[in-house]
Amino acid sequence: FDSSSNHTIYVGEDMLVEPLIQGHYEKFNSNTGWSSRKHITPDAFSHWTWVASHGEHLVCDLQGHRGHLGGPRLNGSTQYFLFTDPMVMTRQGQFGCGDLGETGINDWFSRHECNEFCRSLGIQMKRPDNFWTHSKAPFHKHPTYHRKSEVGGNYCRVLRRL
Image 1 (cartoon, rainbow, N blue to C red):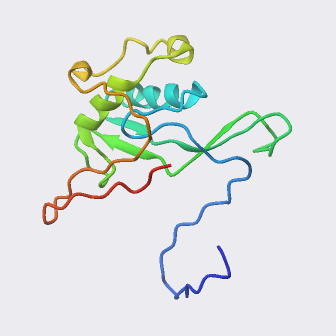
Image 2 (cartoon, rainbow, N blue to C red; image 1 turned 180 degrees about the vertical axis):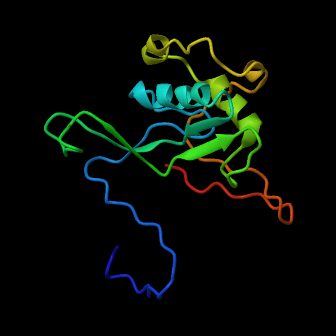
């Protein structure tokens, strides 16, 4: 919490707080299928979440910190990924504007390139049946998109371009 802000906290107010991430903050992948391709673990993890949930969920839009030798420790280790603010996409699109539903999951897989970690997990052939029918246009930036709102037909805006 930044004590220099002028936000008043009221009794009974709900808040979501997380520890400050120490180290270099990076964007690893998005809910559109964009990937930094700098590390294989985040993309394989996203793919694995879809397989482990039997095609119901895909955890993506991963950002945070990758631990390294000589860097900040997490539970005594310097080798880790610390993800924050992930997006969970569902087939029904039930988790808010950033949940692009089944179409978003298919689009994510149309841009996902399985890596050696996917192959070592044995998940390289496990993908949605119709993912190939969606656009494979490359992304030059990695915005996080939000689906059309059910309220008033307005579109949720692109929240960030990093």
